[in-house]
Every structure is written in C-alpha cells, then in structure tokens.
Image (tube, rainbow, N blue to C red):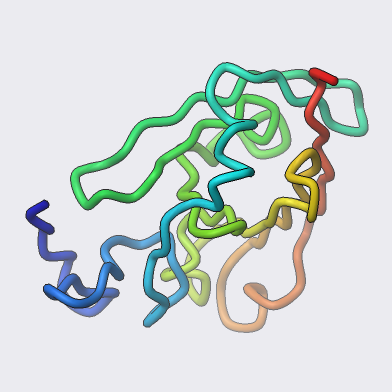
Length: 140
C-alpha cells in the first residue's frame, strides 16, 4: 500500500513507519487496531453516562489507518470526528495537542468500554482533560 507524505513539521510516513497525519501523538507509529476490539466498532451502538447513544462506523483512510466515527463521542464535543484507532487507543489531533483541541482514549480490557479524554489545547492544556467520558457497548 502506498503511503502519502504528511504535512511538513508533523508526523511523517516512511516505508518502515506509519506516523501519517495529525491524530497520533508526534513520533508514535500507528499499529493495526486490536483484533478483538475491532469487532465492537462497525454498526454497533454505544451509550455514554448521560444515556446518549450513537453508532460506531469505520473505514480505512488512504494511509491504511482505521478511522472511526463514534456518534456518541461527538455529542460531547461536536467538532470532534473521525477518530483513529491504533491498537486499543482512540486518538484525534494529538499531534497538534500543544496548539489545538484534541482527544485520546482507550478501549477497556474486554473492549466493551471506552474512556475518552478531551483536551482544549495550547501549552499545558494538552495535559489535563477538560472532559472525560466513558462510553459502553450497548449490545450484550
């Protein structure tokens, strides 16, 4: 698969690394999604602590990274969308966290829960989240 070069100054793609884009923390290689957790994404419904529900739909981007839209995560901060799933992590714009809003989370050990943290961005603001949300897989 051909990888596209990322914008200068952020993560770059080379033949032996897949660090493309703004979503992964700077210098972090993308890894394929956890095989067990990936089973809980496409078309499944998730619910947060406020009983908001949303579907999870995914597709691979041009760099071979799994991009997922969790509707329920967007309720918390509507401008967040198209998260990347790397291993058990879910990231959005973490490469720019020192300047702009970003989000990061992870699947729980059974893949049926996701803890998300949202950051305002800017020096220091990328360390402490302004919002933490736990969402749970609805289909049991």
